[in-house]
Length: 226
Length: 269
Image (cartoon, rainbow over all chains, first blue to last red; front, side, top):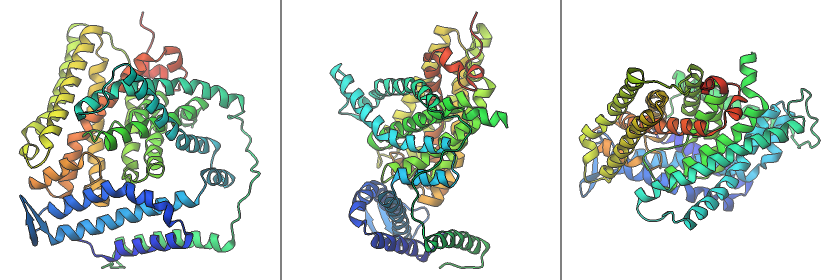
């Protein structure tokens, strides 16, 4: 069963509009480039091997390009790029610290804020640490290049010290948090406040309600999207 | 209520970001850099589930997927957050049931679980060996099949070796629990992969989807087949890794976590 073009095209259009309005287009290049392996995989596999598609357009070796497959591939690719761009716009326009402190003011617990914020900040540090571990193991004679099988073997000397070191940090972090009254029952008083106009608030609520309404309408069969 | 709040003490809150970062960094390396047919992206989730409880485990899994999607460009993991949640939830249940506890045993009590574990591993690998789609030379799948079989054999040797050397039945039960988790994860993730991405997710596992489709499977069954190819073996390894991590951590440290004592059991006499 093939879905129509309205869905993917309108989602893509809406995301492009936000890209143009926010003017962060140049910073999104890396998001699009990073999505290429996924997009290429989607295009190739669906175009050449779509189950039960018979409308052949061309034949390359043992594989056949089908019209159905090509349609599905392009729609899925459009959806995936729109998804990547939407996340890209969010990351490019929103500062993590600002977002978390505003969410805390709106009632997000300090535990949730700590888990999310510190996890995001920890990823690049752990990548750095993984690099250091690989260098150290290489200096001890570990082979990290060449055949996939050899690289897979390198996972054990990488993962071991990484997880071990990270777990050791947990103890120190617990002490540090406790020393700073992390489990105190009182709420923290936010000092920074962020501008939030009535129009923006209305737009947020409106968009949220629109999503719910559209989902209910399409699933319930009242709105037939071609 | 206390059962819930003790899963989120300061120590667990300090562990969760570490677990999430381990999930993301290892998972990204395995799937996008090494392009292996497994994931290894739930070590942190299962560790938190076992040490802190099912709800903390589920939250770690869900947050891992969502943060991964935002922190690293070009990923397809976000929509799979519910699957990661189920994995963490199950890990909490296994931890509560004491699957990861040391079980010194002799004779039948030791070798029966080992036989069950080997049977479970064989049950998961045999369909891969017998499926003609995985031997299609048009794809590099024979390499992948060989890799997954080698991993399964290594896992079997690990279970038998640990049982023999340490006289401990726990590794066998851990393998069974991991395999069960993997089967459930595969069933949960297939509809997401099929509906959101048409079954293609940009990782090393795509080649398996392609081979299954060429062999005549439809979008959903190709995604499900790929899940059954990768998930059970992946979760079995992950559970095994968590067992080894727990065995390496000091008991004093483990006992400070809410479910720590349940997870590792009483001090051996």
